[in-house]
Image 1 (cartoon, helix red, strand yellow):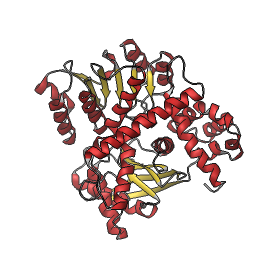
Image 2 (cartoon, rainbow, N blue to C red):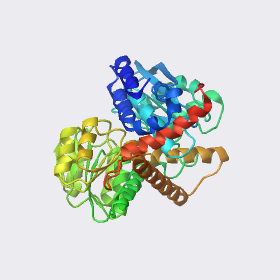
Image 3 (spheres, helix red, strand yellow):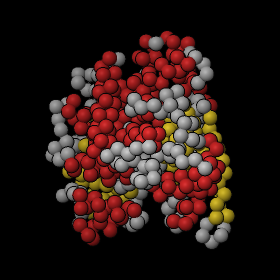
Image 4 (cartoon, helix red, strand yellow):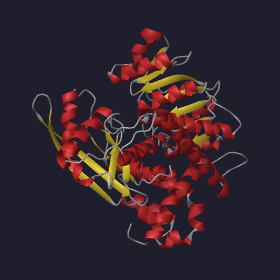
Length: 448
């Protein structure tokens, strides 16, 4: 079965899973040069095998709210591929979570994890539980109930979940407590734990910092730098604010952040004092709009950040937040670099548009791999019962992000995807990640 036939099969079989189809097509359409050069991939049906998860585990979650009322949610764990190591990927709590979203995230995770060069497979999980408006007691009870169902399918050598949207250090700690309670094991089954009981320094900063480190290498490849650049960031969560923080450190000026209610614009830029204020505001689930009363700036209700002029865009909110009209605004407003802080925040049409206009574009599986890279470092620290310093992990993260950038750039050049200095990072990253997984599967035969 050719790649085009495999795409047709996915579209027919999973017509009700648009996000998953989008992710599969993006990879499929960029790895064709590699696939054609390796007939053994077709012999072993590598692509056809990789588009089907090893397993999708679904379960019901019963829990009680503060009124003593029984609540019922759905939960899943998609274990996609363990060709390179234990399944690894976050847990997302959000009302939009369904099998399509988790399959797209798990599929992307296979290649993202492969790009890090660290021994991790790909997986993803979550629930349609909405943490917004819930008390701490309700969130704790839900996390306990979620792990009560999930614990039998995960362990430090089988599947290692982590945080994602709606799941931070608090939620990971609750789930880890339930896992220990049920299994009587103290192991690295979850990453993103608190520092002091198995967690790694710099895990909180890793995804946002890593995206900016990747950007730094993109600019260097064009004999440019972050110094003096104007940056548009979407989102106001962990990734967004730490990307803004690191961009500031490297001499750029970040002028926007956003959430589901609108965009916050500050022409003078968000310095560290302002970013620290935003972190506390989000931690307390208070409105971004309050910023204007404290620091000035402008609050644009129900608007996105892309209407402002800038040099760099870091979309870091959620999947498909940037459509083709948004991409046109980016180009019109002078954006020259786009690095995805979120997973697949640009629609396929938006990606096509920015690439057509030679905007340097880094897909999430490359640009935001810093988070899972530091998760892997946490797994290593758990295994040897040691902690690394912040500085040691930061240096390792810089090296990993540089290696991802350089490998993607080299693959783009090798397979004829670089055009007069314009590097196709999407093709390069997909080729590198796919080849590492495919070569392992060929070596295994047909058992994975």
